[in-house]
Image (cartoon, rainbow, N blue to C red; front, side, top):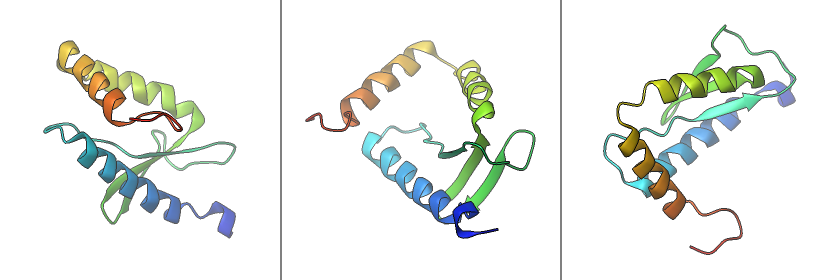
Length: 101
């Protein structure tokens, strides 16, 4: 495994970012799940790789695993109205790059 293949530092950075996003949103019961999506390289595991790092767990996924994982998450939503409220809060707090809040 060479330096280009070592994703541990990336996984730690993604976990920190997810933690910051969760804190910025400040919504009880809402989990920000960090993912690293790998293009063009193999990823162990049929459903991706669960990587425990300081600050939480990061899922490492192949590009082809992203849509099925998102579909699973949407099916698991208990309340469509709560999901819409979450989208509104994310839009309010996390403005696109270059856009003022």
